[in-house]
Image (cartoon, rainbow, N blue to C red; front, top):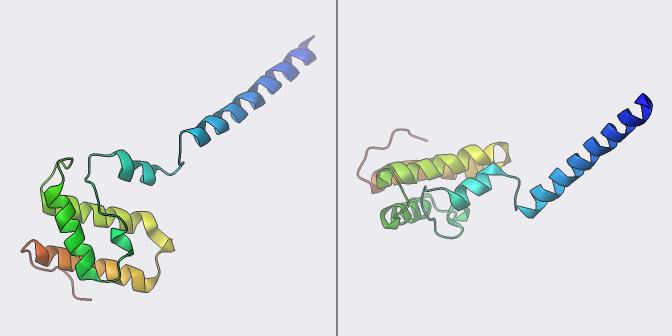
Length: 122
């Protein structure tokens, strides 16, 4: 009798794990960073802003988005810089050295666009 109980308990446990996986698939992406960019109160970005090649274009796009956004909770400069840092941090090791350099230059261009002094020299 005890052996049959343990088998039933084991089967139920395995069934629950399978059910959890299917619900995760139906709710969308598993990446929390994608969920943050879609549903957070950060700000609404223009399409493919981080895919642009020019640091100036990236900075100008972030500035426009930050100033137009009604979802942001902090000042425009802080929101724009926050989104740029968020993207860099989430991309992590998947960014090439040249791409990272472009995004780091975009930080300086963003500071200039908001009338602040650039912090680093690349």
